[in-house]
Amino acid sequence: MFKIMCIEDDATLFQEMKERLSQWSYEIYGVERFDQVMQEFAEANPDLVIIDIQLPKFDGFHWCRMIRAHSKVPIIFLSSRDHPTDMVMSMQLGADDFVQKPFHFDVLIAKIQAVLRRTYDYNTEPTPLKTWRGAAVEFTKNTIANDGGATELTKNEMFILKYLIERKNKIVSREELITSLWNDEQFVSDNTLTVNVNRLRKKLETIGLGSYIETKVGQGYMATEEAGA
Image 1: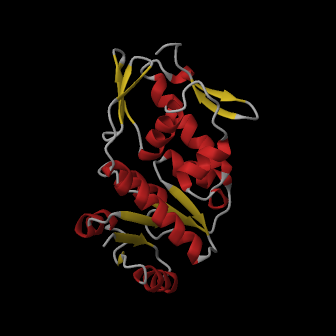
Image 2: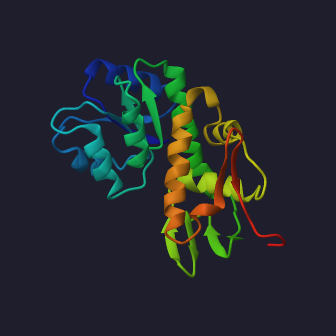
């Protein structure tokens, strides 16, 4: 049974979420002390966190930063705010997905299932060490390293990198990446993929590989590899 922590101050919404998600055999925890979220997070030790942006004391972005400083637990943001910068900020802070209020519970459940599957099922599959551009890519550790150093990726970033290098020197459309990563593209903003790819490139730049994830305008992305490699 997966444990889900909901950092949501709307008591009515939280109760509805608890009832609906419990039907899917999830164990749901709420927050009672919004000035001690990290203490309650440590006590619950959840498998996934759902965070509202507008909260008492500190906003959801603050608690996302705090959680990310200590844990790689998957995070989904909820928000009634519709400004694109909220979604961008969420992704930049390391969130795994973003749900706009009001939402249909089938959409939220589908996103939860997809994130949990990526996080906990994906890494249980045997995945051999791959090399790309002379760098060692360790899927199970979410790391890539070469003589220039090493960098750690989020699970979304590693999924994108893995998908592209398995199809090296071939253009992968944005739609194909979205469908593969989130399973159902209608639940995902196109901007979410852009944020994740840009963040992946910045990390690869630290070891001299950023330029090898190419954008093909109007077509998609391609991981390039030297002939015969």
